[in-house]
Image (cartoon, rainbow, N blue to C red):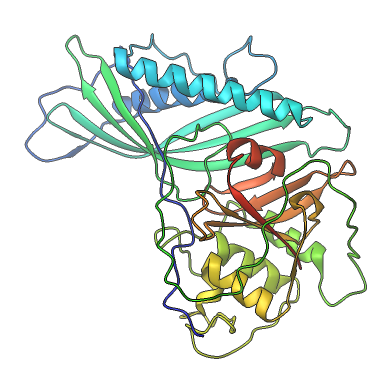
Length: 379
């Protein structure tokens, strides 16, 4: 049966409320409409966001004695009682995540978090600010063949209030991404529940998340596909998008569009036909099949056309294989990722869009979402 137009391919954006302040101020005599913040005020906002996000990152680092990285010297932070409680809970959550990662043999020895203001407006003493965080975490060589680093870029919207005495108070910071949380972001909200339409689809078999997994070696050369080319493509465009393809960051998420591009780069051939029939898979520059961009439709296409088979355990995935996640266990897949590196100890590292991320360990995904349902595909 041909399904309805595709179900959402990514989870809803996640929200964490925080507070902070700065001794540098913006004049509160703004007019009735929003006005662009001046350079000094934008710099203040950047320092506030940098301080909050850097503290989150440091909660994951093995040696927490030092704070950051970017040369900023933020002013003393002022937190409202409720928001301080929220942030304390966020830091505690991240430290628990660090403990879960250590149990899986993963740790970080250093971190660099930098924040840039993309846009800042002020209206009557209230500010709305869009920022981009760029973070690099250095893997500790626990087993010896971990990648050097994992990197991610993520966007936030901040709201602030001008307080008496010329300080700004951060009243909220909300992720603008619709993929899984960044490794330094606590899980603060459940994904939207998608109602099953009652139709039968080739949904596949969930995979175990028990580590380590029985060996499932993969022949990387001499076959139909070039898995090294898939990984190379994903690692080239994880942050800088390929201009030959349209982006779907504001239309359900770009994660499946991204893995489709990488699979094509490695030799997957198009299957032409109608856009809504999940048995087709193609992109022509102005349109694409639902299976090219939809997480569920991609799985249905892949399994029905025998392009890939389900693996019994997610830790059996190798370079060029795909991992999908149903975060809230509602039967609808929310996110797609490609393995671009695998250590000799059997740890896959994932690269993906929607919270653009480079070589994030599978362990860190599972540590953030231990109760999710995972699917693993041998391509």
